[in-house]
Length: 95
Image 1 (cartoon, rainbow, N blue to C red):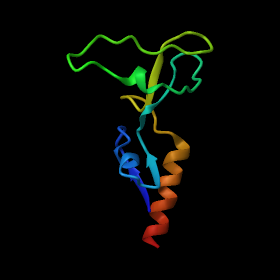
Image 2: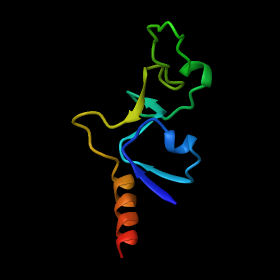
Image 3: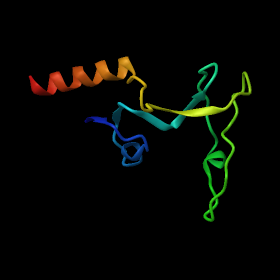
Image 4: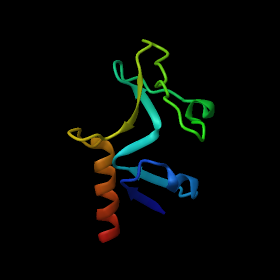
């Protein structure tokens, strides 16, 4: 079963949904603000103490600039490939 979602929190993956199309991206997929290189972030880097903390964003391994979550922010466009895949899925279900 394929799912099209606006969720960015990967709850569908945690529920073991096999194929998920994230229209608005994912918090778990960071990329560099500057060079747009994607990166794997360790579980430890995602941990925030229960009392809260000011956390410096992870740095890019290539250019040392700050990483950002790959999510659609206001004024940004949806990923074209993901949008087209979602359209195809909906058209197949509707026909």
